[in-house]
Image (cartoon, rainbow, N blue to C red; front, side, top):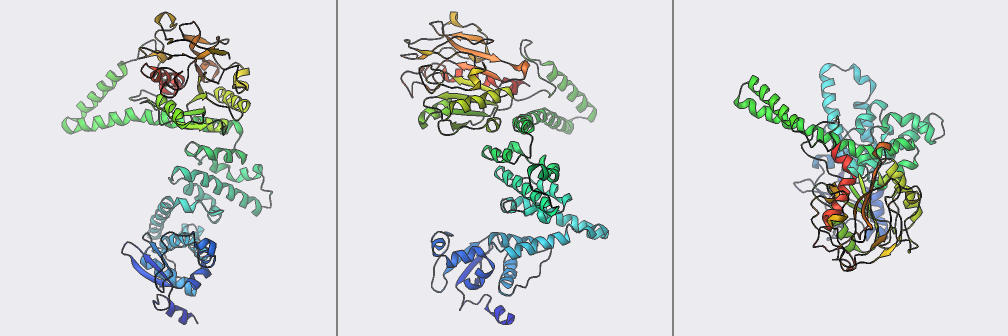
Length: 547
């Protein structure tokens, strides 16, 4: 019977499926009935009419051939072995073909072959008896292991996507597997696989798979999870697992991006000095190269910033300031006005900003914590003004920096949708809520500037509020600093810095967030409104730029 089945492999006369395999486009022929017995994916495709209409776009119907599939990433030799397995369930797995067969099994959803490949790796890579191998075989094993990790890195999307993927691997190897570099979107899958592994071990040890028991198994691996690279939408899932202490999770999500920026910037002067030293050594003696590098480092160290400015911390000198990560929280359903605000904020020292419409969703503090500065404004109702205010207060308490554009609705007491919660009740904001004031082409006049040398006013040569110059009639809250007034004496720019308490900086701009290109009642785009907004964002996050 097996011999009869072998004769059907690659039989063009009776086959109804054609595969085009490899870069050389080698054709292989088989039968959909046979293929569907080993792959649930193909069974659904071939025998479920609803799926058949949607599945696989490159599927072609030609004469006797009902389906054609092309896989340039497959090996022709390995695919020949796969067909033998599909027809006879016979397979010879070896070091030379295991990764090719595993890739085929994953792409075609052949679960039996997936398990066979992983069993082979378990026996030939991770078996305890490998420690007793002769030297040459240990070297070969080491090379084979490197290929294994390279395979995971290249195919991380499917490797970490399958539930209970790590259950077959010994404890000592899991951390090595988790250390491979993967795309950003894969990190949530890594977390899920660690969670699966913890639950699996709880069941094996007859323990209830609750967070406290799971944590006893997975705790050594939690440090391998890069929360700073994880998508912000995934952090809620991490928090719900209860594997992290709340404060620790907050610290990790807040600290990681900053730490990475700091490590990058501290490395840059070192790498520059090394490259300079190497270039000098080509033309000069080693001793002269050393003396030159010393003198260069002295000259660089003697170039100190203005004594009035904050001094660099122990993280070292910087050739370049890191770029800020900015989150724009906009209660604004108009795409053109959101883009106008985004245009004002983005500059050389600010990365591409992220916009979340808080009239439709309220990000948690954990999501906010992925950003150095938040710019908040509203032109419509908040989804939940109390919850938003509470989250923002927690964000600032944990060191996050906030800039608020107070008009048109954010602090307008005549609006029922005014910002609420602890950010207001606990006195985090620099100015009070108030009613709307109208003016006519009001500006920042020199006699209204309280702090002429303030960073927020750098390069702001003019600012005009436009035809109506709408703003909020307000006063400073306790502990706030006034930077500049409108012509009518109402605060235009104010701040509340709480670095001593470990809090973040809060800056209030009593202006519209968008220019007169969006609303005729807003500031003139021909004045320096965009510079003013960008300066406020950079200044609020100044600890990230200086320290």
